[in-house]
Image (cartoon, rainbow, N blue to C red):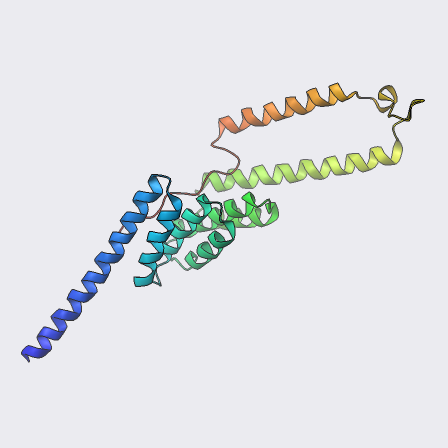
Length: 210
């Protein structure tokens, strides 16, 4: 009987030690993450992942560290591993960061779908709602511009002067006019971004509840 009690006590002691080791690796990773040392943070999280391979929060943290290092392919893999998390708010954060990850790779259609899933999981996610509106509006304006360009090309072609160069008078706009307009819109975009965080805010905070 005494041997059995000793074995049970030893089992719980070992289990407690493993959990403590996992928590310690997470804290170390979070410390590196806050200092901007994302490669070291990812390494610490991966060590924690060895002792807790089924913990989606660790996968999420690794995804964030990889995202910050611009390792988008591996970040996507880790975020997808974190999706089984049950908490809807946390699931929304995972989808949101998958959207950020896709957007950084200029996969706007894919990003839009992830933001919609984030908003579906957590209807209070204001940033997801904003990003959906931002990308949708940008896509609509881009489609309108494409249609306009096609119509202009169909109805009117720029004339040429005697040197064979485009005639600015017949084309309706000089290079300088075009440059000023482009600069105006760039400044407008910057001013709009200042009113919000940015079109696609950075990945969220790491999980620290251990």
